[in-house]
Length: 85
Image (cartoon, rainbow, N blue to C red):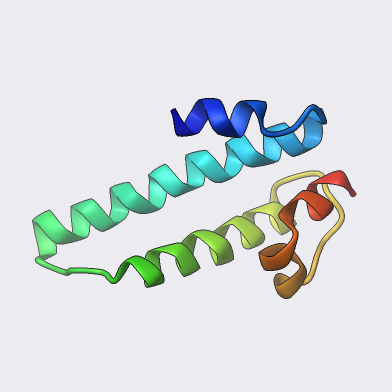
């Protein structure tokens, strides 16, 4: 359901791809937290997981995506604006 919401959230292709990128990254962070819990008995706070998604998405967008760089606070406040650049 979340994948579908991200897919239809915008009619702009760049923004849609950006939302799908964040969706995939969220799954990656949750998977890593799950493995840390199972194999290392490390429990992470959900707020820390959300922050990790925000920062990792910003870092990946700066280094791997073909968008103009945004500052971290811009990314956290308006990621759609950064995807449109």
